[in-house]
Length: 181
Image (cartoon, one colour):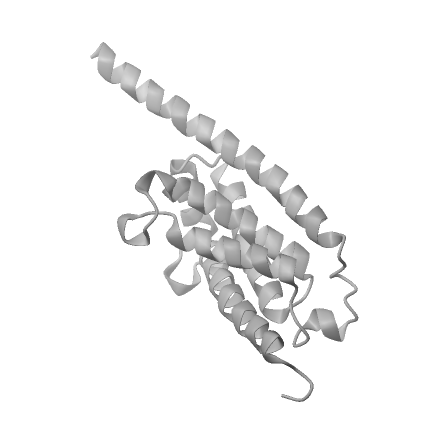
């Protein structure tokens, strides 16, 4: 490879696979494509998982996955794209965490893998086979990496923390109701 090296090709493959999977998951949530529930079905599922309001949660998760995934695949605004996708996957991992690590048991393995790959791309950058490179890295500056990851981490901690408190309170209410019977 004269102009591009193995690193550029590897980053391209990682971006296409991670971004493509994320974009497809987001399309399930937003549009009901690929067997997804769309906003209404995903919103109801999000409510049942403790993310409230469900419709707004479905929209936010769908946009972070579809938008972040598409931008990652294109290699455009890589820090923001990777951070948004990583935040959405942290929210998904929180739902699956009680089931352990492995996906076959309902665990968080898949969500964690996609989230860490997205965060890794935000840190490593998209490589030269990207729209960021073609545009002179106007939306891929060094300072954008810690900013995007920091803002996303704070927002994700707030959303997941609120969800976890809501689930814990509901569980305690159910246990109290059983005790009173």
